Image 1 (spheres, rainbow, N blue to C red):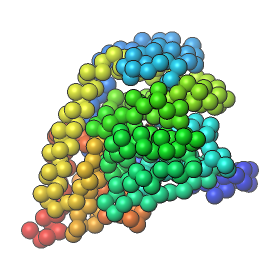
Image 2 (cartoon, rainbow, N blue to C red):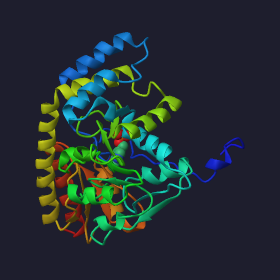
Image 3 (cartoon, rainbow, N blue to C red):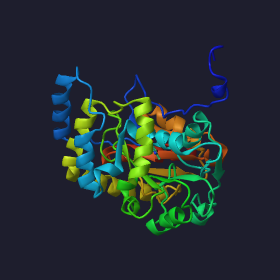
Length: 356
Ligand SMILES: Cc1ncc(COP(=O)(O)O)c(C=O)c1O
């Protein structure tokens, strides 16, 4: 740290993204990207926009907002487009959190939430999960704080029902409840249907997973108009052109080719089921994930060792070193061929360990 760094950030621990390998070609199952390419229409839209990069993008993302409003059955004024969903989450922490309005979230969830709180100087409290890693919804009733819950949660993939989410939103009418639906297209129930009913609900979404656009950086929030306006104040005070031209056009084209992406999601769900069965037959404990990843541990094989040995064999999965989950790995669901390779190598490693 230089002597110029603000004291506000002296103890800030920044987010550590999953490895993005620069040299070797891995089967990359570590950052929950889609194994499928964008649709042809998206590729064409990007090429077209690249010709007019001398012009700023539309700060209101009008075409994209209108398209998304149609797809999600909400009003354009209930939407805000951002540079990945990380940005809408940060806008929400900035807009709604302060010393009097702390945040609560699960003790095991997306690792960026505590960072958003810290970087914005917002106090936060982490609520422990139950022994099976599930969230007890009533732990979030009347908490007197803003709430953020990923549904499905990461890295477990476990979900709360729409009824359970509604119970949380309803019991905290004077605080903002953010439901992060980064993985909802792989099997969760969306809370977007509740935004007209509750003025304290913000649902966040991303194009990074189900829409094969992690590299384009596109996310959005759906909420009551007043919440959207508040976050727009933050956006126009930080980065008005937060979504670039190519990404904006890619987003419109992706929503226009929705069927292609939803079909990809169905394939991923099918391959997830196949992979889970294989892992369980090898003796792994696997959570009932409704996301595009599995969270798995083996009773006789260390989580870190499996991660390292798979890496040696050209397969990257995500290992977290924190104590409570150190025996687990989070495995993104790739294509069937990629998952066959993963299962083959994992089987081989387990056999090697048993001296077979
Ligand atoms: C739960 C959750 N929310 C949000 C994000 C952020 O995604 P992005 O900024 O790519 O939209 C991620 C990314 O891994 C995530 O796991």
